[in-house]
Length: 337
Ligand SMILES: Nc1ncnc2c1ncn2[C@@H]1O[C@H](COP(=O)(O)OP(=O)(O)OP(=O)(O)O)[C@@H](O)[C@H]1O
Ligand SMILES: [Mg+2]
Image (cartoon, rainbow, N blue to C red; front, top):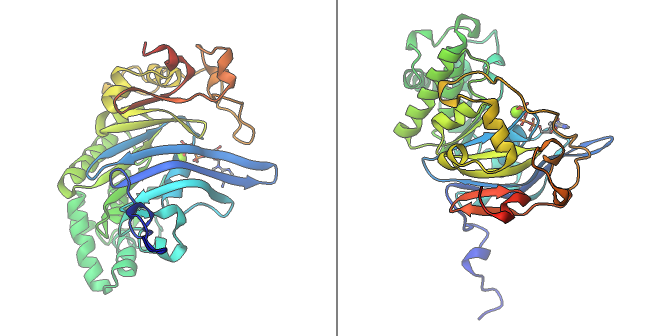
């Protein structure tokens, strides 16, 4: 064998991985004067073509940070410390800013948390949707407006509203416009960060139906971020439950809702007792998530866990309790309960 020969897995151009995107052991931290915030710790999941994955957990558990890491859009004090983000054979974690510009919008797009309220109030909505199309597709403003009108149709807003200012549109329409913007350059993967949170229950249901329809029609992969488990239960194929920056349980939606194993997942489901009727959270889990500047040793959930034992001060392993169903908890050593 010559000294320069490489095996396929060493070839930098195309790396082997599961699905369209596989996040492997992603660790992202934020630097503050007091130290490093451990926002995302060794998070792993993968999403297949046309599949939708839900990312759920209480506020501050690292959902947005995981999403911003994928697109390398972290704030200046954020850093991907380790891990791989394998997308279509490339490791995005190692990509330069120039390399990422070819990925954002065209390959992976994101509906940002709270974005529908961040539309520029003095520019017509359609022109704002057309902006990334002009930038990324290199086409004229006139052609981009034709595409914008088609996108309005696709997301169920009348083309007549294309020159409306954001304040002339309802909340649901503004969120549809944000979805249109995410679809503007035909990405393979869309990340929706709390895409329904600010909307009333009826409109939430319509937006989720829209996302589901677009996923089927356009064969899109979706990562749907929500603190609301009903969103995951209704629209996703599989899910990841995060707590204090870590994945505590992952599997198909059936695994998570019919056979939850981690005490945190169980308590979270109890807090949303009627997930299929989209009821508001009626009870909360006692206590608060830990300070991620100085998280407790071992299992981060143990200070709030009603099933904790002496061994919870040690890092739990992740157990595959049934095919494709993973749980990070010492209790799993004794088998599924
Ligand atoms: N720029 C930043 N600097 C320092 N810490 C940050 C920064 N951004 C986020 N964090 C911290 O990182 C942790 C994860 O935050 P993140 O926004 O990812 O959570 P989340 O799950 O999206 O929460 P929410 O449901 O409220 O949107 C939190 O402890 C948060 O305070
Ligand atoms: Mg968030």
